[in-house]
Image (cartoon, rainbow, N blue to C red):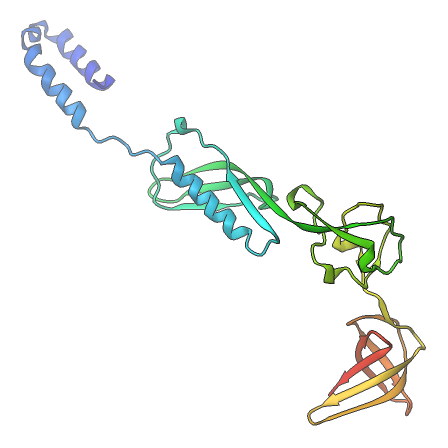
Length: 248
């Protein structure tokens, strides 16, 4: 029997001890009322974990390799009121992989917040050096090999695509067996200042080429200014092999 009913009954008996003779008649009614009182529904911990899992699955779309998500346990003794609108999100400064935390908020019919730990593994092939590589070295296929591992346990920006690395210049030295990072890659210089370049002009229905002199340095894909043989300065896009594309 709830404590509030016991307190009420004690006060009644204190005021009128004669009610003791009626106790056998009153008690069943009080017990029945307590049994029929509506209980507050509790939140199912499994539903919270499922919301965390679905949220992290959406966050991991586009990551390379295989993604394995394991939500952490939720203490069932917390006893949160049942929620019809769970809204997972990442706390500020939290990344959606590795050992992470998801904030789950209830917006209806109650308001509460719980933090759920989770582990997100991203297992993929990544590139490591096969020998010590020096700064300024142009990367060849023989300089790298692939290794499989959990990217969430490695520094950010690890290179997983061979096409991102081959032909690029190293911006720093790389010891043997070290993972290659994207911030270490530099595009090769395609055009050098004062170099004679081939101007390739194209437009609707025509394509011509001529020689010119580059006015600045430029890497592959960068804009560059070129002075043509007639003295006109034109702008184009630097391409490998001292070629500058000019589109009209």
